[in-house]
Image (cartoon, rainbow, N blue to C red; front, side, top):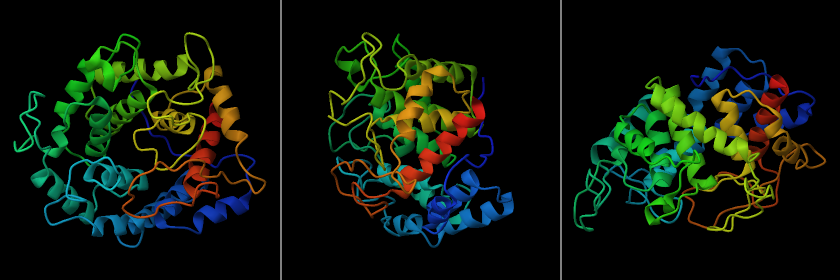
Length: 335
């Protein structure tokens, strides 16, 4: 089954004032609300999307790129302002990959940004070694998933990443960065990062049977667990063991962290048909809006953001509201 990205339709039974609130915002949110939650014609959506490159949070991010092609001077860091993290934001904001500004920025990354120390075969050669080109990735599937998702979205050759990710899928259908240390059980965090990369690869038209089969197996990993339960006991996973992040608390940006809304938004974008295994997760999303029909930002992960992209923790979040409404619309259409 090939991934598809069907046109969205308006979500049922939501307050029109919430839609206006989303439309009256930064172009990165405005154009997606227009596409996903209204019946606006394609030409209007495309015109709105074009503003992402020139007069939005996306334009602010683009202006921060260094002459060496990097953001914050590095391919990746432990904060959220590195090249990898900014490209993730630009992808989620919907910067048109075909735009001139996107092509210039991505060209600089492709031609100049490297992973210090990592050789093509995955061996570590020391900090002074000039390593792989950025879109060839490094070794952790969590990082490679994030790089691969942006690379595929922006039309880059990520075949090395894809080949490596396919070889690292575990028997339960998912992926785990701790597999190199002997773990045989997949991680929600790593799995969602990889699934997004495989999906972007398919949507970019560079798919194969092997990629589709691997993605669907990974998708089943989430569905078998109803998106937030342990398969072994059926208990709700309140917090991730490694990061202490809450699977039932919604953040934006999510970075490498999994949560239920991120899992549902992946399924929506993949064109999956919702079944009873997502019903509980959908009910969780529905229960979280406030009296005005807006969803709060429940979590902000500590780290250095390149720019502010959303509300403060606990305040109504346009990003969470946008994603929640389009997930609910997807579910309503597929029931």
